[in-house]
Amino acid sequence: MSQSPTTPQARFPAIRLDQVGKRFGDHQVLEGIDLEVAHSEVVCLIGPSGSGKSTLLRCMAFLEHYDQGEIYIEGALIGWEIDDQGRRRRASNRRLRQSRSNLGMVFQQFNLWPHMTALGNVSEALKRVKGLSRLDAERRGRQALERVGLLDKADAHPARLSGGQQQRVAIARALAMEPKIMLFDEPTSALDPELVGEVLAVMKRLASEGMTMVVVTHEMGFAARMADTLVFLDHGRIIARGAPAQVFGEEAPPRVRQFLQDYLERNALLIDANTEAPGAMPSSISAGDGAAAATKGMF
Amino acid sequence: MNFDPSILTTHAGEIGDAFLVTVKTWLLGSALGLIVGLALALLIRSLGRWARLPLLALSELIRGTPFLVICFILYYGGPSIGIDLNAIFAGIVCIGFYSSVYFAEIFRSGFNAVPRGQLEAAECLGLGRWQLLVRIELPQMLVIILPALTNLLTVLCKETAILSIITVPELTAVLGGIGTRTFSFAETLVALCLAYLLLVELTARVGNWLERRVGGYLN
Ligand SMILES: Nc1ncnc2c1ncn2[C@@H]1O[C@H](COP(=O)(O)OP(=O)(O)O)[C@@H](O)[C@H]1O
Ligand SMILES: [Mg+2]
Image (cartoon, rainbow over all chains, first blue to last red; front, side, top):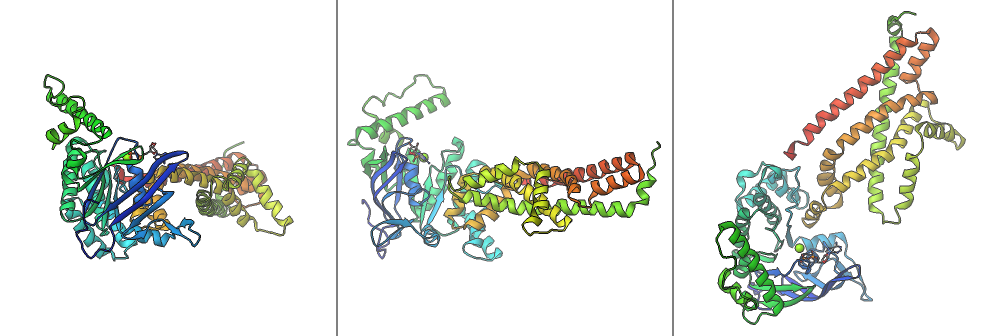
């Protein structure tokens, strides 16, 4: 991979995928995915919708059961056990839970528990899984809320919070369990545009603190600036990977250029609609020049 | 024929006992049905698509059978296979058995109403199956299924009248008996209606109050 682990004592990458495949019925959604994520590395998964980004991320947490290849989280195979004959069997719940304890998952739809307050959401697993007393759990829960700047909302139920605040609570809920790796599935896609920034800011701070992160995102600006490695998925395969400058650069494969160009045009139209400026398209975008325009214009 | 409510006061003790029998068979039977129904819903959910078919069919069969027939089967069929129940206990079992499939159906719809993502989030954080059920699913389901539960409870309250046929000394049996013996049909029937109305109305109020209380977080 493009990066060596920043923790030299780590004997294995934070995440390693080896020839991972997944099918839904007879639809091969992922095929032959090889990927390593080093400790403290930020990997952004990008690509067209339906290309398998969510499925890949969910396989890493074994929310989807990948049916080919292997996924190792902190050196341990997640979800499956291989028996003597080389057949795979579901790992025990205890082992799965152990693997997942390294992971914090953040979803597009937040998935907060609406019947609990923000603090209740954040401290629930500390009580029930880590076995902390109510007092300790709430103290740690408040610390987690403070990290996302929402200490003052501790007693509010999710319905009382904006989308951006809900997503930050969801991030705090995952952080409170002190995972080594954070997985984000389009964390800002369900948000009104003006609320995207506060969530991205929290994620940027996490990355700068050395958190290992895998982020599925459509925020190309965030991906270009924050990612150590960009991974571009198309039809369930990785068709480009590397540092952002490389993936978005001049030698980008045509599929990636096309994707970037579409992205830019969509955003140009948005900006256009917002400012009501005459003259529809920025002149810098012309056919075949999308990738270059992306690196210059956007970032 | 003149309307003479004093017939009710002269039989007040008898009627009071019958009222308690009605409440007892109703509430204990419903509690039994609630617990069995929840277990049934959990069992059905845990089974595969094919393995659950026999249970679904059985549940369908029970729901297609009139309550009176169920009472006959349990009360008169029981002794023939060596189960002899006292009438009140049999009444509780009848209500519990009959209502369990309806409770199961309500719970099943309730489970479906809790978004999957919330459970995935809980799983990722390491919460176990039981904790998911008790901490995430049931509290939220309750808000959603409370109207259906209240409704079923009021239906069951009125169904206890059927238990008079299997000799349970509940309101309908006792007031009906008094009416026949003293020819004061009007008085006893009015009292009967008022008693059921009281219970049903009370149930609806408690249900409404609970709905407002447990649903508070939604706004
Ligand atoms: N549970 C599922 N059952 C069947 N097909 C699915 C399921 N989840 C995703 N898919 C299919 O897998 C493909 C990849 O989906 P997804 O991983 O959600 O893509 P992305 O996140 O890149 O938009 C899509 O074609 C989608 O329709
Ligand atoms: Mg997706």
